[in-house]
Amino acid sequence: MQRSELDRHLLEFIGLLREGGISVNLTEFQDALQGLTLIGMEDKSRVEGILQSTLVKSVNQLPWFQEVFRVFFAPPEAKSAWQKEAQEKAESWKKGVAQSREELRFQGEELKFSDEQLATYMNLPEEEKERLKQFLERSEEGTRNGMQLDHSFQPMVEKMLHGSLEYWKRKLGEDFPITPPGQEGLLSEAQRAMRQKEMHYLTKDLKDIPPEEWPEVSKLIRRLSRRLASQVSRRLGQGKRGSLDMRRTVRENLRYGGVLLKQTYRKRRKGKPKFVLVCDMSGSMLKYTEFILQFIYGLTSLVS
Image 1 (tube, rainbow, N blue to C red):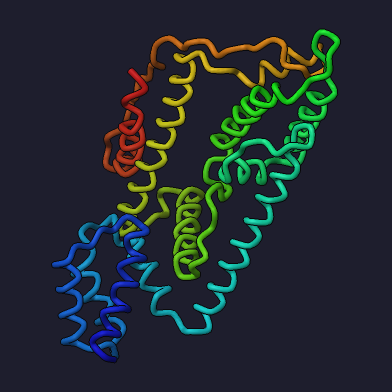
Image 2 (cartoon, rainbow, N blue to C red):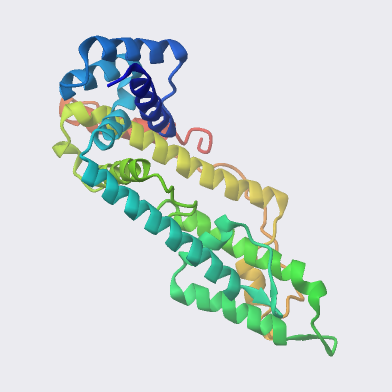
């Protein structure tokens, strides 16, 4: 393998690492390049050892590194299959967004939605999709002061739908792809494998998790607690701003045939929820207590 080709492949590998949050500076790149030049590329285990020792800075980065190494050095036929699958998913996502845009029209005109909002709509339960479409139909047919609704009501309709889609975006969480899937097959496969690992840990009994996997579980627990904290914080912030409560507004206006005559706003929530945490610090329970403490620590900004 020529030196220039080795440079290019190493840069591609580092690019995948960065997608997972592993930053690599110029010195680390040069160290890895020098190590690979010395040992060659014939022994896969030695190559992995060189890359891990020069590019991975903490044990928390190890799972993503291992997945990237697995897919990067996979057989060509596997890479080709992943690339084809990624492209098919990207095309399906684009078609779904376009179809969602067509379904969410007001008086024949396109409404203003971001691709992320349309992707949220695309992943809604069918009954919720039908409810939103019926809301649009009722809004088109409704009257106000005896006059047919015109396009001046479009911004209000958009705001109502934006509120509903934001609610569902939070509710769906990470179960569905809200952002467009990448067309890079190796990255998509590594991300899929990481999500599968996380689901494995979420459904596995803590006592069955070996000690060498505890750092990965701890990282997952911290991320879940931060996500929960951010969701609660957003809800509290919306209450302080008195933002529009879409669901209550729709219910209040059913009597008017779906015409949005009366708006209902969220009320400010007072105080933080209070928790008392009692932990068993005996040797047999220490592992479980450690995980629980990490989870609660991630919520400290929201509880007292």
